[in-house]
Length: 470
Ligand code: HEM
Image (spheres, rainbow, N blue to C red):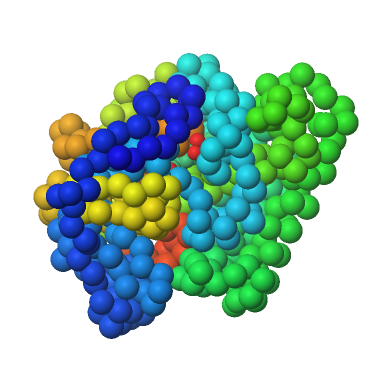
């Protein structure tokens, strides 16, 4: 019998269930020499080949005395993320490096997470995001103006930096009431890159105690310091002079914690930092992948351009265009299938359980990965091929064969924000500038906390020949 407590959060079913341990078997082990050899040579390809061989079966990776389960089948992912979510928590050694950045708020678990979720959820309902769409469209248009001016010289630009600028500006205006000066927000862009790449060593050695210095620690701390230097003064100012605003910072400064008391500066900081990073980094990284993909798939690019031309005409992007940008949406959905930026997230089992027919012991670490599940041939024919048609034709065959935004009680709060904002930005960019065709391919994947390209993506853009008003 597996028992875990009910969280009281809407949408979470009772977590008490009968589990038949009698028929359960142990997971097949992938021995150390096979795991390590493949992971050292090319970690992303190594993980993919282990997952392909497992073919949906749960396997146990032997990495010294750290032996996480690798879970890929959608039925098992559903049990972890949704059906038994209170038994599979965001705790344990994999989460501790992250908690140095995000603290104990919306990305934690249990009562602190519940309290943060209660405070933040009202800001991100589909209804509220829809009400903000007109403003988002206007800001995206302005931000893309700057980009269009910038690329006019025909010189290649660093795509990640440009996408971050456009996304930061949009998010800061719409969800942070312009409280963060753009030049200071730009300082956060390289800090986030340093953080995502410097965490790899800790992710690979999750059992290493925090007090043991590891390569990457200094860059990580420097990155966190930069973010705090930008955001803490803003938070302090709003706490000193509350103005009744309804943006993320004002909402958190007026909110209460799990004990019903006003939040401490640390609690506000943890959720402001988390919201800023999750709202900006995920979207700009996804949009960074878009351009090399379009360059490599001229047929997809042509169809995308045709749709944008026909929906926008000579107009600038507006929120009313969004419901008609069907192919833009399908391209973004497919982009998140092959490049889900939150590509792996671990859970710790509180109580023993049986997943499918595999026994999981209490305290075990489980790795779930949209990146791997999204490339399973059983659910996605010819899975490595970029083909937005899959989403035009109906999308995922199983709810958890496609989960770039997670699922269950921890499902991404910003899913709807991403979908609206990304459609607006893509339509706005492509109505004014387009990537210059070239034979360069799609970059390889870099191992990092998020799904980064191996090398910086530099691309040239050219103005759309004609007519559009800036
Ligand atoms: C491409 C865009 C995005 C992707 C792929 C993405 C992915 C995810 C995933 C996979 C999770 C679940 C993590 C887990 O279960 O442990 C998550 C949670 C979350 N996301 Fe996103 N996200 C995106 C955009 C955004 C945006 C734009 C925002 C804010 C406006 C946001 C805010 C959050 C928050 C606050 C959580 C934590 C929710 C909770 O645990 O209650 N995300 N996201």
